[in-house]
Image 1 (cartoon, rainbow, N blue to C red):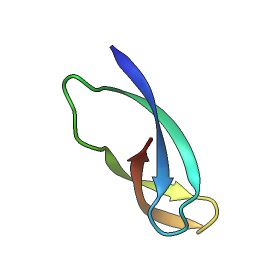
Image 2: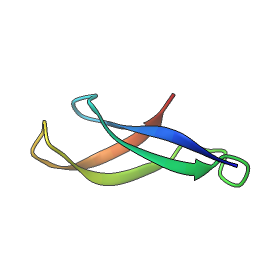
Image 3: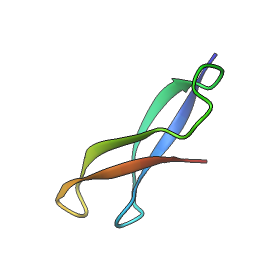
Length: 49
C-alpha cells in the first residue's frame, strides 16, 4: 500500500513537497534533488515523518 510522505529541504528545513511511496518495497528514507523556493536553488530533499 502506498503512503503519503513529506520531503524536507536539507539546507533550510522547509517542508516543500509531498509524494507517495510503497513502504513495503522501500523501507529506507527517500532522498531526491528538488527545487526549493526558499533557498532559490536545487537542494537535496529528504523524507520526514
